[in-house]
Image (cartoon, helix red, strand yellow):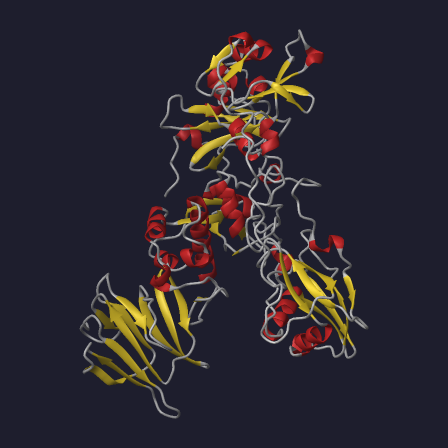
Length: 640
């Protein structure tokens, strides 16, 4: 849906920014080490009697959106806009793709000697011929070596309606909105296709190409690329990503007869077979939305599982320069847990393979043929541990190939029973376990998903009122506020500013603290009797720890009644946010701004050191503080 248009005072000076999400750096609990961290990257193979196992993490190239990560982020409460801003640096989601846009998908590579295309559920026509043909009629094509193709149109019962003088190329169009085309080759398939079907000769045979509206294309893509039962916001993120990819890539295909393959080479497209009613509704509710950077739609690359890291595009794909929106991020929550930790491909093993099996595999591929195998050099990696190149040394040659080439060799020429390597983030370990034999599969299934972290609700569960504690009891959340904290609460704005208490006061990290819906209070005993005895945690800084780099600074500008530039952080507060800030002792309550005004979930927001201001035009008051205290508690799994 289109973003809400705000009033003129809100649009002046707005800087729409992309979001990135809560990530941590350094040695943090739950963080996986890169695959190379505990293994030797130079693997000497000569003289080995042991077998080797590939131990890895992730599935796919790791550039752009991580599908399992999007699922984890949606479960954590992030909306599609926030998810996409995390994976595509500096972008925003805006209406940018006309609904009438069409794309061309090659759904079949080469016709068999005899092929039929049936029209289902409605009348149909052929480009260049007058009139329409009845539902369940069909086009028939016969091919024979050295002869022109025989093309004819038939009624449902089989008698001819046109041809056999028709030729190729030929295009079939729906005659009414309900018509769908069904391919009966190489065998009848349950799927049908919206839009038109063209048969186009090429050097490899006669290609079948489906030309379809971009949103009708998405109906056959989204549920094929992401499980339709996944969270709503993950599906929204997927469809906006797929729409952006389709639009951007289709602008680059030039005179080629088609824009996309129907496989994972482009995006998996299954026509109507994979359509789901709730996904179709979701597509209808988000027309035109795309990922944009400086007003231009960007190609939304994505893969299944990034194992807590995404990648820079130039590190993965040869011959590509750095794209500012495809930057590597550490894809973990504030506790250091990878958002895609639940993926069955978060960790995996392939093998065991014997040295002769690996040697035969690599020598079967001309791109990795080196003779008698001597060593593998697995030292060239990105910061995540994903390999960019592999050096293979043998008796006849030493070859340095891209990691994707090495993966393709294993996938295409590996021994029967050995699985593919699911990503380039792998290491090699030795084992005396028997190697894969014949068609038997041994120890190659993905590792089980790690258990979901458990909630600890002991701090936030409501407790009965206890008069002995004094202070004030808030039945809405079941907690007391007492002493210095109650004085500060009342003097600084109460429920409007801080919300209701979520915990009792308790000791955390050497401080007496108390969590509220919008804040965390700290008692500093060394400052008792001063205005600073109760302070607010820099919760905004904590929850945007890794996001500052994607918040462009404001341009310095003379301050006015509706504009205040803060050189301390390089951001400005303006209009309604400035009025709220000025009227409520903003520096004490909020601290300095750490972003400009931006869009999150269709509303205007702005982050400060201690909070987030939100503009809700349909509420009163229209400006309020966001529930950052609740967000932090959910990240800690202290609140559901």
